[in-house]
Length: 205
Image (cartoon, rainbow, N blue to C red; front, side, top):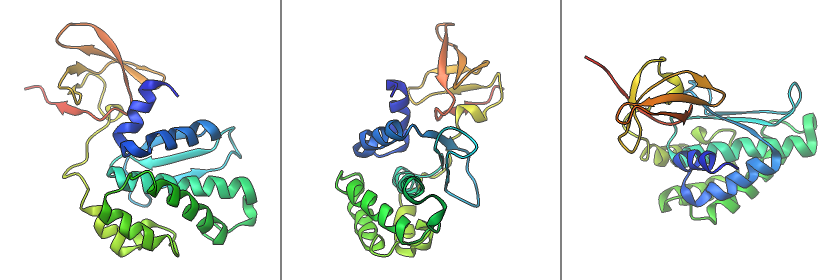
């Protein structure tokens, strides 16, 4: 995996779990998309039926712990599909077993704070279809939500001014595959910035 792509993962996942997640993505050749917020679902899995790769998407606005749990939820669907295809129900015993085994491995990385870990260990005994249906777990996870959603570079109109986490100010330019060619306002040089980079929009007066 490209170091810059791993850096993106590090922004969305707890750092302790990044290597494990990156290995899963590479091993299964997953087309992984960090998605805009969707009201009806936190994540999604699509099997390689109409396209050549497994596809997983996760909403970008989730906190790191919710993001990781959602990714594991969808990756469990992938493993279940590989083994059973349509013979297993979406959240049946086969999926529950895959999810439980994956989450047990992730918990061992110490990626979760103690309160989240405690609720997760309870929930995986008999996992529901969605982490949101686990009321205690959902309540604990909400404690770690950011006060406001942070926009992604791809969500800003072309020509917008923005700053990145290190405070550098850019103007958004044309898209080049997965990155945008952006002008650094300070040194007047252009750089490729990943489309999924969290940014702060700067409104010009």
